[in-house]
Length: 294
Image 1 (cartoon, rainbow, N blue to C red):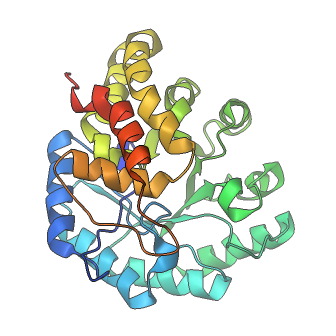
Image 2 (image 1 turned 60 degrees about the horizontal axis):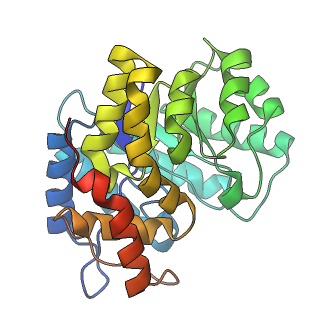
Image 3 (image 1 turned 90 degrees about the vertical axis):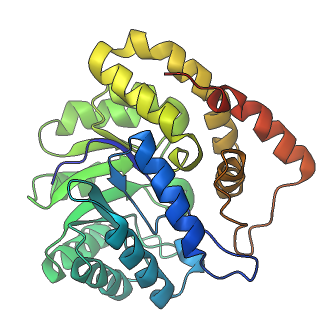
């Protein structure tokens, strides 16, 4: 399986009672499809997977799989706090037709490199889906470092790594050391263009929920015309992307969905709604995207 283009790391919409709002979800997905995204990544960190029950996660995966058209890529967030639970989520995703799962290190456990290698290998042994590794040390507490990548990069079902470290040197190192062995996908949103320059094949992109057309335009411009042609588009995106990376990421993405006419409700606790001042600042940062012209 090869990932390409903009893959939105989907929010999970909630209604006023705090239940999953599938009607709003369908409206959002239709908007993203019209904007030109390549596929779908439900139940990742932007989707608040840690706040969903097992059955809710399965319901989200099933809904997105049913919505997807032939040719649209499907990658299921399957992370959990233990290897056993990751395997259970990956098996459910496989049963629902997903060909790949996105996995960061299990949260809170902070496994060492040898434990992390064993964890991913046990998942590979248990299910037939492809693995997209997810390096997000700020959330996971550990990095998917060289020792882990050396052990897994040549496995035929470890297809790539989404890097959300925010460290450009990671993209350079992966390009130099693993090019042709494991694909790089950008998850460091405010330096996404730099990641594309260093070989990222796709942008697995939480911001695409509320700025899909602009993200697709940036990716397509880079692919067709190179980094210099895409630079001004990245400059226009940068304010909103940098705001997202500065904190309250999911709340801002959900507010951004409201700004584009696709409201998806608030986050589940402990995440709280933005203040009026925070909304005003993010709306100002979003203005170039709201005015976007391809």
